[in-house]
Length: 79
Length: 243
Image (tube, rainbow over the protein chains, first blue to last red):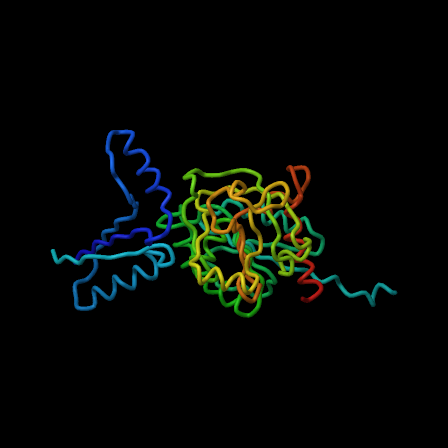
């Protein structure tokens, strides 16, 4: 089973990378772009089973994301 | 007084944790050993025993290559369980730069670090104001004293939510803030976007301290300054005079 984990800066937290990208897009002619947020994408494989979602949720809380500054969500796929 | 009646001067024992990627371990080790009555030894991140130590230093560097988030992997090193127990028993723990990041990731100090607001690695001498001079790590300084200590980091932009900040302020846990030459805490003096110019914080009990600046790098005028000595002097004073 495959998990796709998306980690993003928490709402309301300044994301310096997002701000830098947002500022550079108009220079390339892309106008009107707002709220650029830069996050992380993690793929992992784990044993399939009913507990998989719980497992990934725990992984996110313990290691993959820092809940103080980051939000996360994930998708599970059976191959 | 006869020689036989003299008791051997007590020694303060420091352990400097070496993680894969630590690079300020030797500076911390040498800074400690420049004090009479202090003795530093290295601890490997796989060690699980801290017996006989009075203070543990988590040094600066790039533990585990800063993969995922700074300090996120190091916090699961075998030694960190022992460090946590050591702190719970009242032992002194100081995290410098990456060591501070590890303490945050481990939840031993409140808050989190994210990338510098300017997106650049900042390496320069900065001014700090000692906000709490009553901790075991800052008692050699005067309250409000301005000290000059270098920073060298990419992720020193401290964050904590409003509730956590209020709690820290209530318990005097903000130990040092970035300030200007005059000792004023201003936006311009903030090198990394850190909330409230926070440069270093302690836990509620005051025995765990983390800071981004590197006091171990300014412990001898020959390297450009000695304002960092106060941190180690404070620890020595605390240990020798038993609180």
